[in-house]
Image 1 (tube, helix red, strand yellow):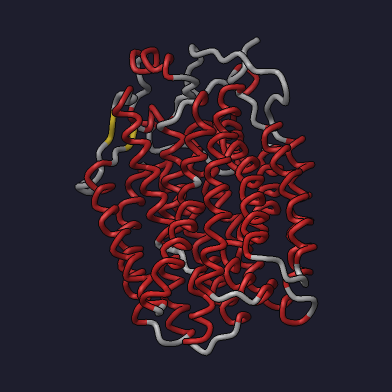
Image 2: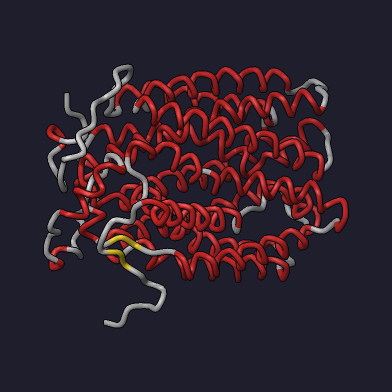
Length: 452
């Protein structure tokens, strides 16, 4: 069978600047995939221009997110079998076309059609990039790598909010944001097209602890190619109770994050009475500090090789900050106070999230390294189902009951449910593990990862 022209497969693990460059390109691809789906900053304008209620918008997000959920799972399986780039590159270009098509939307039905198609291709791209980040980041630097990976959802939200806050007062139309979005995404997609490469299936089955072990990995005789197409089955992961703890815990925890992603600007506009441009400008401080603190927390996590305690601290402080923010609702705080509280909330979320991603990746590796993208596909399915439910239920709660106050109490409970799930995950709390760079392919869990 002829291979697509954009597929390039490495038979030796990349080292030095080559590995770093491929990691940067994978991170860039994730930013593109997430940036292409950004719409939160212009939701207040869309609601008015399309004569659409918040409830209708929530239903559109829910339906499109369900489409993305199944796309994410299928893409995870394909990514493990055919390679990450196989689904990634086409998805990026199709997403760019969908973004440009947004300027042709004139009704809620048109918006629904566009978002369903976009979610199908976006879900595929994001899961492929999660696998690539694992492929190009040894465990000793993986938390920082995933911190930069979150610049996809987090950084794209920051960029979209910043651009909207800057350009909406100038152009005044929501269509302008999609012209900007599509053009930026298309240019970056060409860079990814000509730069990205996969590692071979045999290399994807390796557990890489540090850059020092790469010479050993590249010098080892690889398994025969005949087994490359069979990475394993999803049930091999789902038999492990701690994988369920990961999936359920983080799904509850992300309810607050996705509330802010989908409804952040709308919530500020409705709850505190600020304009759409001001609300977008306020939100950018949440995303900015989230990213900066996340990188710092992940650097510490990598240095100590401790994930659970860092995530635990972030989860507890996130819940506490949310409670403080809820108590601000119904009052008339200054813009500065909202910006400061939002920035602190973003910082606390950053401390919790990326170290968890590194831990999840490592726990997947310890079961079967060749099922990495499959695990992230299940994660994508779980989280997107939650987002679909959230998108429908949140507007109903806001409209029928106590506004945003009650809804934020609900998502705060979700934050708290993440805390006990950390105790069920595999990994040390306080003692830095000693890593053995000599470990080989697919070694059993009890023999792998930590050597005293």
